[in-house]
Amino acid sequence: MYKRFITAALAAAITAASTVLLAGDLPTLTVAEIYAQKSQYAGKHIHTSGKVVKVNNNIMGKNFLHIQDGTGEKGSNDITVTSQQTANIGDTIEVDALFTVDRDFGMGYQYPIILEEAELSPAAK
Image: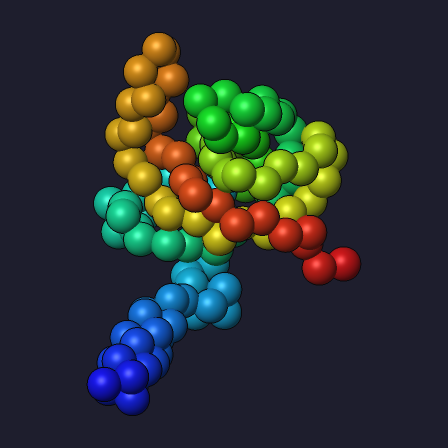
């Protein structure tokens, strides 16, 4: 009985692990591309990077960061990222996140595009 349970648990773990995308498997987009291709990537995980220009920690149990990478024009050159992790203004970070469109948190927090549940890491030098 235990052998069958362990076999089933191992099979479930392998199946779950195979559905997790590694950063190298995610599409890498610039901030401008995020705005330009929102219908193509909505609901999918993506990779991006940029310089942190604004940080609001512990808002509704999340940290809100704004990043820019030098692409895009006014109104499409800054992307908001939510994460349990945080960074400092001026840090350049890598972001793996869920691309979400038309997100309304209530209380005036509405985003036509936002990257959620992000995993953050320092950008490679």
